Image 1 (cartoon, rainbow, N blue to C red):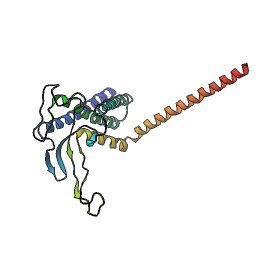
Image 2 (tube, rainbow, N blue to C red):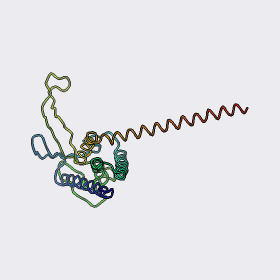
Image 3 (cartoon, helix red, strand yellow):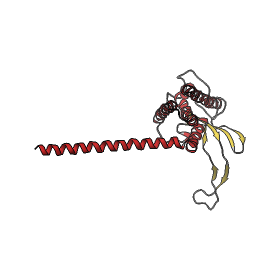
Image 4 (spheres, one colour):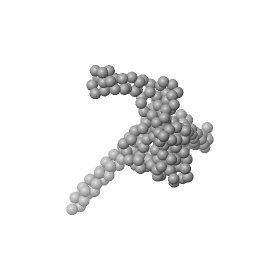
Length: 234
């Protein structure tokens, strides 16, 4: 496969993943009340929540900082992906990098535009589209839509357990979305199937650091020689 075809296939793959992510989120946001659940099985629910933070509902960074960080990260991943395509990297590596890029970009769309085009979600009514700029929040501060919930084990802690005795225990309680899943799957698969490429990354960094060390040593040697020659002249 030529580099041009690989680039187009990677782009198509990213676009398809982003469309799937956004279709799911918009369908949930415009058809479900906030915190509403649809039971698929005892261990799988569509549970609509929104969050201001990172993947799986985490939130401990300022919203603007987090969104800008995401944009920078996606840009760097995109540049690296383009270079790998030009260097003829393995197809599986290109596919997994594309999956990572699409997942990282998916939640950025929520942050950038959802606050501008949707009304705020509520447990009492369903959100709906509004003219751009008349939504519930500003640019870069929209909330991320999450919906996949897998309470695989729901039980209670034994009464004799300190601190948590008698409390409910849920194994795998995070609620996440399609974009989060893309990021998680890509990272795990990269470590499982693309170790040679990841090793090359670390090796290249080691080589750069060693080259810098050699240059520093040479420069220090030159300084010593210059000082000695200066002393001899005097």
